[in-house]
Image (cartoon, rainbow, N blue to C red; front, side):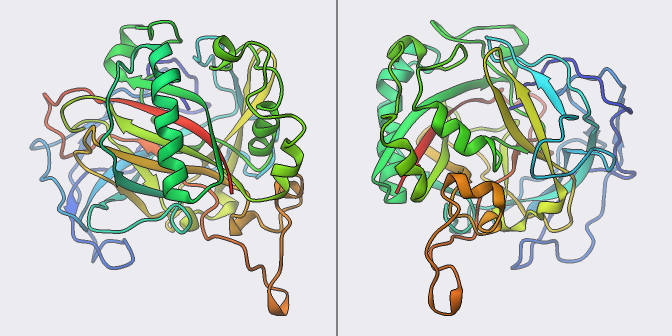
Length: 393
């Protein structure tokens, strides 16, 4: 959720790998490069006061060729440095304050570093929310003014709930929050009609929830909305989820899933969303990042770079497509035996021989906006919306 265009102060200047660059390369069946791709030298000007989301470098010779399905581009992602404390639970050392408009203050304990990764064009692959943590789907809907807060809540939230319910087979889906993103409009400090500020694309590798904050957020939705809650104007003091049922719901399988959509009539050609395949994330590289609001504390996961990460994106995504992005699953295999998961649906049935029979491979998917090296310099700015939903199976 780190917004672009906000000042941050890392403990050391952002670093960029020597020879960092971008190139379209052929991919193997496992999503990795076939052989060592050549690199183009980048011109960079990193500094301690650099703003997230600024252009970090332009490949010499201009943009590279757009990758065909199954090919990839070599691009820089913003990870956490080696000295940032790892851990699935909060250390208290990595944090920020978030105000009522959704904007962050200074970041403490972070060390934002740029590392090259291969981002594969995933349009020739079938992805599933259960196995990979995300999926792309055709979804032609009646579009609204996404910069009008009331229209999004009343008209688009139900559309997202129907889509998620249809694709996941869930019994109940509740939409509870959203962000509209545009770097240009965020830089201009534009606001949504009747809502919060337009946010910039998030240029840090992250996941929206943690093993602690995911069940806490669901329980929060069974309480009167808080100051920063999007639905406060609609619900008043009425909880979104019936408080008498929430604990029983948390004993079953539940998930937090975002619906991400391009909201311009033209395809996304700049600053697209990259998603890391859920099972490719080693938990030892995860960093817990605390977000302090006026009346609650949230958590995200950041991460250090890992050679195991498998990154994908969907070039030129249109307004009639949507990405379902899973940011937590109570039946995700990676956290099945984690003690902190016990209070949020972590325990479940075992099959013959004591093996869990109800688990799915992906618990969550790291994601980030990134600078696609195949984008043309004059490409239109990306405008997008993501709606957050809680899903009960």
